[in-house]
Image 1: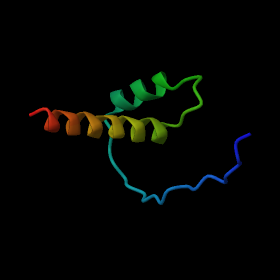
Image 2: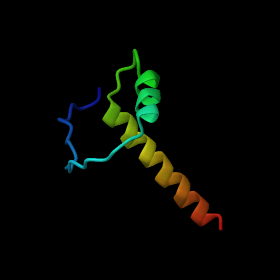
Image 3: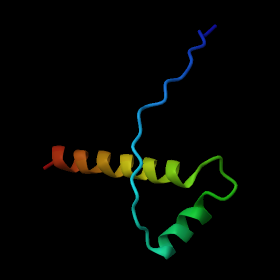
Image 4: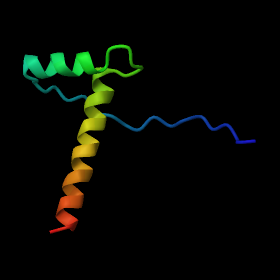
Length: 60
């Protein structure tokens, strides 16, 4: 049986950024009915983009 561990929430910093209205609408439509917040979606998208950039850099 796995041992329960209380998850640690990573430190965060609030950043205010502006999104084009059409992009906000697309993200909100994408997460309808999902257990996902706008912030969580954007954070995962940025992580994925950064990984892709690193892979491109490694393959150069």
